[in-house]
Length: 79
Image (cartoon, rainbow, N blue to C red; front, side, top):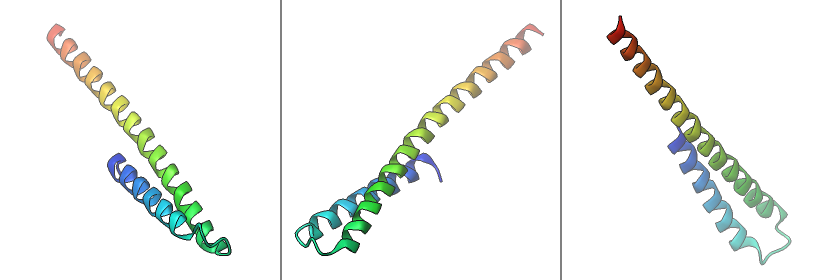
């Protein structure tokens, strides 16, 4: 799963969790719906955080690859 998919799923889970929390907040007796909403919110938060970490790692990897390509080109020009 790439970073965009992870972020998208995370945001979708947060939206569904918020909708469920708003719909069922009046009825305090519905513990299961509240627990599901909370779990969706937490899962969405984790997915969004994972997406941000993946974006950061992708940037670092791209940066390293560019540096290595520049080093190879410089060595080829010298040799």
